[in-house]
Length: 225
Length: 225
DNA sequence: ACCTGAACACCGTTCAAGT
DNA sequence: ACCTGAACACCGTTCAAGT
Image 1 (cartoon, rainbow over the protein chains, first blue to last red):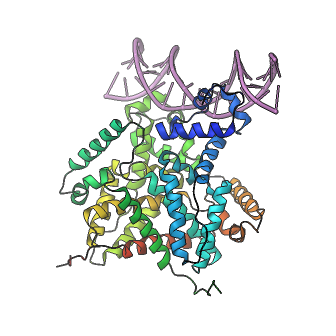
Image 2 (spheres, chains in turn purple, green, cyan, yellow; image 1 turned 90 degrees about the vertical axis):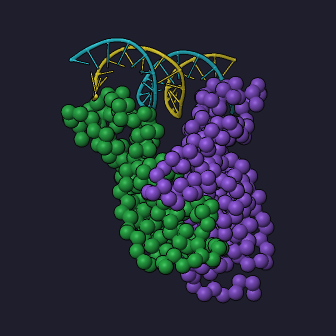
Image 3 (cartoon, each protein chain N blue to C red; image 1 turned 180 degrees about the vertical axis):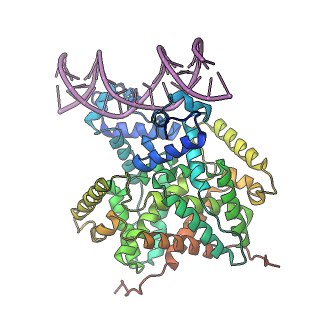
């Protein structure tokens, strides 16, 4: 990563993301990233207006890694399910950085493309323009929060530290008075850590999609004429 | 706020929340809050272990302001709707601080009470313990993200600055190539700002609740024996 | 065009000291 | 018990200068 002739913008973004993955977003500092490239902090300002710009670039890179399936002839909600699964996979690869997408998804090109795609599918589902706008933004941030608030998700690279924090959380929940928090105590295991990631994300997506389908919409004309 | 004999913990939390409301979470610094109380930064460390502790107290205050309706005999999803509406109202009063609840809702007492209530209602709805744990945490963070990513929500107290940013966002969306982003351009108004908060939140809640109701669950015995 | 070096205005937090 | 004061190790960012 170090000892390059010229500082490469994409490399900088990559190592910023790597730092976030390993130690969390707070560990991503201009000075730290500069050091990783053997360069003065100010050198980064050739490529980014400020720290916010660097983080925005990280967010864009995250979305850019999303593999969006091609449109086909299946019902809109099935296609939407595949699109959201693709986004979810990209986010799950970088849970510490996923929160960056809560700021302004449409600030980047891939973000705009994603929103466009979702709005198009919602329109097929019979949503008006305004309905799709409100709902589309909610759908995306819901994916983000599914990832960043996955029960007991690891905040660092260190598996031992992660295990320890899961145990601590579980012990704390189990030490609560069962008379006051019966359901919390009973669910301590599942609240302290994600017992099944597959079940968690499948359930979250199912809930989201079925919520979307049962949302009242104007009756829509057949799109596939 | 200033010129008190003894530094009051609750007053400190209140002014931290006030700063967040007015200028955003980044403006909340130990030094700034201390100054508001005419006191040295270090004086705050009598009441909070560190800055994280102060922010956790702000998060707790937010939840503590929630008015939870008493349990009654209506179906679980109607009661849940009222609970979530109550939480949503509390969050909407402090959108800049709402994001604090993404960290660890169950760290505070009111957070635990809220989760307990939701788990109880989901159990009534036929969810197993593990299902309720997964779904309950998602429900809460969904409320948070509905608030913090409300389209075009104000980030500062200043209404002029807010108007300006809405116009800028709208103009940017309208300047996009309609051939590439037809739906985004068509929805520019609704994407740049929330045309109707009532519709936005009503729709979000409806989607969430109907998603919950259609989630597959084991058939449940009648609870009201 | 690209990077450096020194400086500035901020942070959170420590430690020892005051009353 | 409660607060101060000075200091430390960090930040992001400015500006002027180097090549």
